[in-house]
Length: 69
Image (cartoon, rainbow, N blue to C red):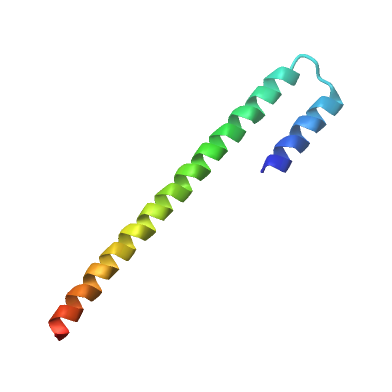
């Protein structure tokens, strides 16, 4: 995604629309930051979800282990 961001900015600078240049760079930068934050929270959410499911699985198997005993 960072490569795409650089390509978009570079192409915009290459076409050199002086009026819209800063605006487009700002938009790309904003979307880049938003995407990074989204990705961070996405991975964090899935990590906690996996941890929670693993915890439940451990409790379940532990319970079954005691039932077997």
